[in-house]
Image (tube, rainbow, N blue to C red; front, side, top):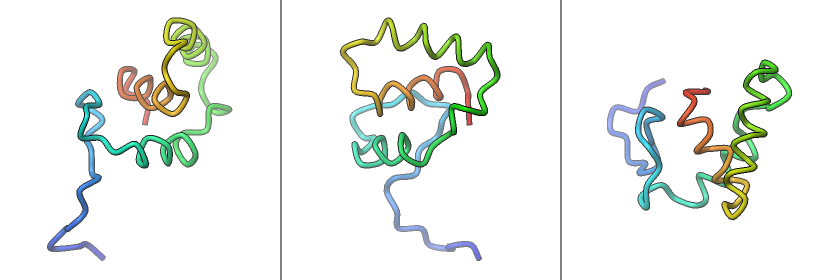
Length: 74
């Protein structure tokens, strides 16, 4: 069933970078329910580990979401 008149404001496109309009609750939800890192191919795991090292001051939920956006991981 498709909502002909969507009223949600939390739809985002992974083709666009995150911004101040992306709700924190969505970022946290994405970290909880987003991609399972255990199915990432080894090369993606390596990139993610490197990404975490250069984003030490960033909250973990932002790291995963931004990484997925930047690397086009769905």
